[in-house]
Length: 433
Image (cartoon, rainbow, N blue to C red; front, top):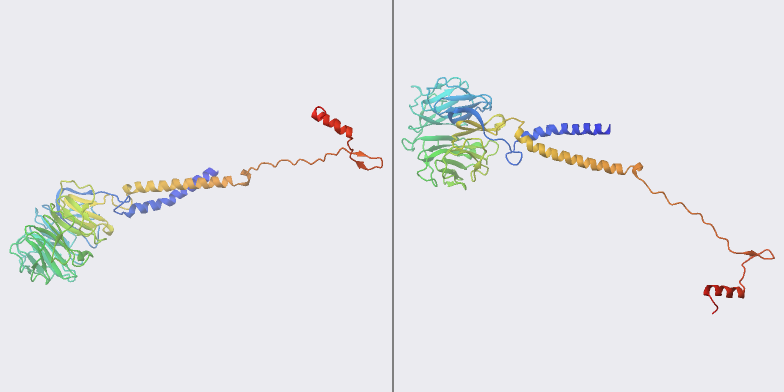
């Protein structure tokens, strides 16, 4: 009976530890034994994905732009994908996808023009009609002023930067002081600093007046470098004045709003940087999409390392995005789409194994301690304490002296006669001395 009760108690302990096990497996730290997961293929492995966007109103909705085949959509955080290119002039390359500030309109910068969808990519409409004033060109970049939702900037391959102040109804040039014919590879608007940044084939440019004029900020970056991406840390909660730039020959950092640039401690000089992303949870964590895969820095771009295995080594990564619940998944655009960490969800077998080992260790330790305490209690029970019986007392018996009764009734000790003493002396000595 006692053995049965101990078994029931141990089962109860394990059942109490089970919720803790599930919670620990879902914690998802990125270092130590609790780190888990690798890059996992999300689908579209036959497509050459060039850009990604996440619906800010529903993080499960991920949009991917292909180099030729239009737009693909996932409504379950990348588990399944469906092509949604109705209205796009296929084949056409998608260079950028971006939601406006309210997250109601999705814009696509393509080789065939600028397009917009108001129904989650179900249908696309060409923004560049005869009335809007948009020139025929390959569109490469999109940026929004978060303070004024109606202001939109787009970059092109041959016409510089164009601006709309009425949600795309009409457009005008915003390329004064930009080199003629300079390809715009990336645009980003810092709504707090009121600065528009452009990454171009000829350098980093910044406009402090909404594109009316531009300033070249290339001090420290070799003139031959092509700037593929530029990103102020401030737009994602980072330090104001800290700017990142990705080039075809490495990664650069400016700490004075672009006035001076320096390569990071790990300069990545032999690597082409295609895109830059700042982590939504930690502003000092920076990701880059490169021709050798996706890299991560945890110190604001000073040192770099790989994120995990899973993406083939011969595949370049062209874009990165965070999505799914709580921005818990990192997505990479390559030959197909990959997401990290794999095995998404709260319960991850890869994370449970080391936790099981730890819990088993503490459970065995608990059993050992409990058994030791049980033995101690058994030893201290009164019936287990055996005492040696005391030795019996030997009664004292007085030996009577050799007495004799005198004639008057009194006891007296007989006295030895002289002769008798001499006789005893002889007996003890053997002969008379």
